[in-house]
Image 1: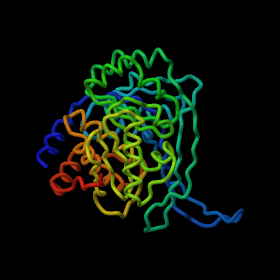
Image 2: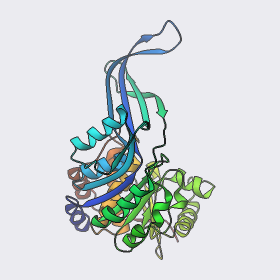
Image 3: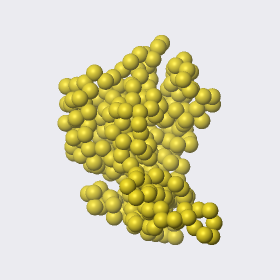
Image 4: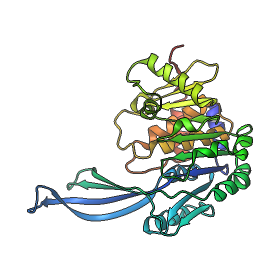
Length: 337
């Protein structure tokens, strides 16, 4: 526990570069008023609309909530969703200097419609995705990797397939030089195997299955084989596989895998953005001197806390401190050879 608490005390002020696909998470709230006479559908009386940073933007937001100084790089369109993201970052004290505004471009927006009855909790009833590609110019990526990344304690790559995180960035000379001294982590939704020779990756079980083929399910040997194989394919130092209510598993070169049971209860309120919270906390912990298992343990606390909150949420440093103090023995169970 003392090691974990020491790492947490180093979070404030730590500078982390983030190359990210920035997505607008829009939440439209309403109360069910009646059934339509036009069709057998519910009519919602709209009460509120809220837009918050999603995708890689949520990882940026989580870093800031933990006291770090994130330096985001990405692109958004010159539209209402892009304006909302820029405003949210600035309100949180996050620099937008390296966020490009694409003229004529559209910001990817995920609209979740949540409905409730009087005296009941809101439930998501529909999600509408408006996807767009907003790739940055190569010269802008080169300048960020060369001039900004070396001034930070770590680099986080959050790839949602929108286009702001080209896999070629892993081979950029400045990133190759940086990874020899500082942690570089990746969370890639669709192209994980193209981000090689970095410090660590944090895929979920579904992303591992998509990358390697086959399913893990409840088979511990299948999990071990997948973790070792992914570690070899990525040529990384560590892989952390997140497994929902089954916790997470840590694979390192030359070490036995460690399994961390889920923190908190299995009654989950909302998993929206939980992976962003995990990689943000994991990366920040590595930047502050944690081992891979210690960083995963801290990220496991964060993931367990955030899934009990509704919507795209963050975790505070105080919440992590409390989790570490209340659960000093929570940690690595053996996953086998």
